Amino acid sequence: MRILVIIPAYNEEATIKSVIRRINLKMPQADILVVNDGSKDNTSLEARRSGAKVIDLPYNLGIGGAMQTGYIYAKENNYDIAVQVDGDGQHDPSYIKDLIKPILNDDADVVVGSRYISKSNYRSSVLRRIGMIFFSFLVSTLTNQKFKDTTSGFRAVNKDVINYFSGRYPVDYPEVDVLVRLKKRNFRITELPVEMHERQG
Image (cartoon, rainbow, N blue to C red; front, side, top):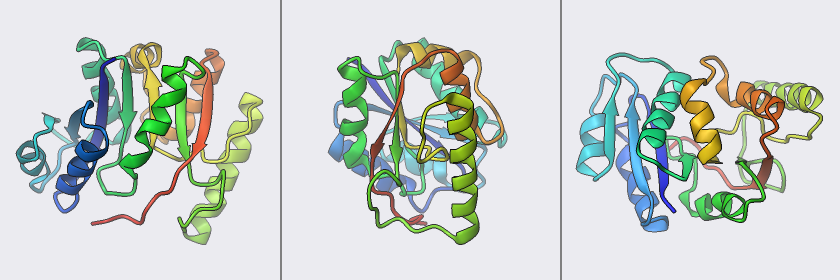
């Protein structure tokens, strides 16, 4: 079972080393790919020094383009599972094993780490929270499945979804958009509770 952790990163030199180190501690069996999305700082250098594989995009494509690059890499290198982890330290790598378990058991094709299933220490601004509630209502209505955290980028997918994402991945608000696209294609999606932290850098 080959597992790839994809870290889309834009100007994350302050945190990328710590993120990679924590992933290596919690998931030593996984490979780590940093997609350096046109950073103007030393994100790429710090990631390479930390032992991660790095793809340097020539300019900033945004989260959608960076993630599709990661999925293309995962497909071409025959990975079974891909896990998205943000480069700013918000996502706790200790939950990666929980996210991939339903995939290993063939209970889900996509597993989303949710801040809102159970009580969490995560706090967001009022406006951001209103936006999350709106998107949760919208996506739940469009898909006929209840979603608590539609904007979470902390997620794991299986090989079928890797293949799908490598060919088509939305550019704008991808975390929300992909849930609708995946449900329309009958992929199985589940949410699991996770803790997230404030941005570390």
